[in-house]
Image (cartoon, rainbow, N blue to C red):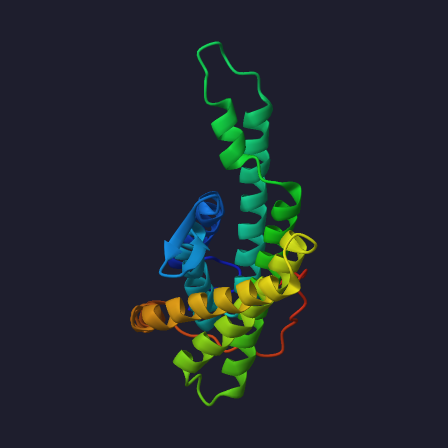
Length: 228
């Protein structure tokens, strides 16, 4: 295992992939997709990948580095969003005719914007926390599949419980919000289950290269980013 104060190339690669998947999923949220009788956002296709990566980081590197990665994802997503708003505000040239389209795609409503950021942070942290605590409670880190599924249910549950009331409270009925919440959790958890064989192989491969970590006496406070 690498030194506590160093980041291996594989960890950096996972952290970058996590940030990219998060940013791309938010950019894809503008499009709705019909899946049988259900209507979901295109971002659902990409966003669960960040949970898979989150599980891998917690399993191999521990909660502290997962916490750092989550905050990096939050910061990079915020930066991209702010830069896009700046791009919208810049005066266009006479030859530019896509202002309305750019505003429609990238001009996120502040309420949706706030809901998305709060939901991501809460859901990802809960996912990492549950994964870490379950590993500590297991014998020799066994039961990765169960940890991955249970942590996803908790993480996606918190994500949806935070997002939909903030984003659509007063706009949709509470029954509709409840249905959307349950549907999102089910779809994203099924996604994780389907991807589980790939995740297991990836974790095994990474463990053979990087080693393994079971969190000991660490702080689970979200804001202690400097503790790695």
